[in-house]
Length: 151
Image 1: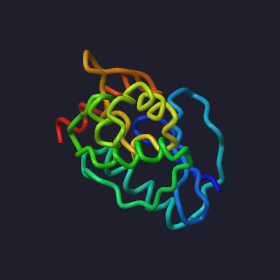
Image 2: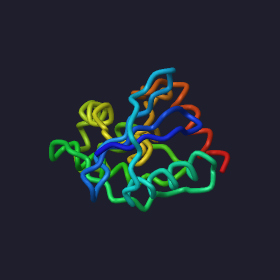
Image 3: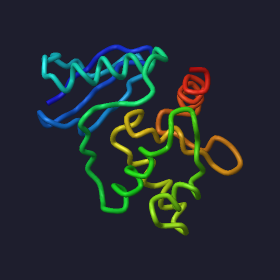
Image 4: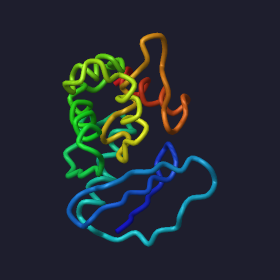
């Protein structure tokens, strides 16, 4: 099942299984998939909470998520969810948080594979010498970090 909505950062496409959100994609250009918005409760709650977050009104999410990944990726994403709003950690610090202190490069790979950006806030992971990367580009990463810093 899919659901899309317009947001201040582009069109957000959510995928779910009827109970859990399984992926979130952001389309910042002019084209995005046209999805017949359904009224499933989890999608409506996700739209509301993401909109509140992007407006600076929400600092955490209360949504059922079920990202699909390897056990290592899942451990990294779970550790990442513990990073507080408005704060950042380095890839090395996140590696320690998830119990794999020497796996900071693999942590970067897990961040790149994160199926639920924003909800699992991979934008809060930075390189030790700068912002690091982000699947949706550094401008989007800086926007999200500034949003959290200013609210």
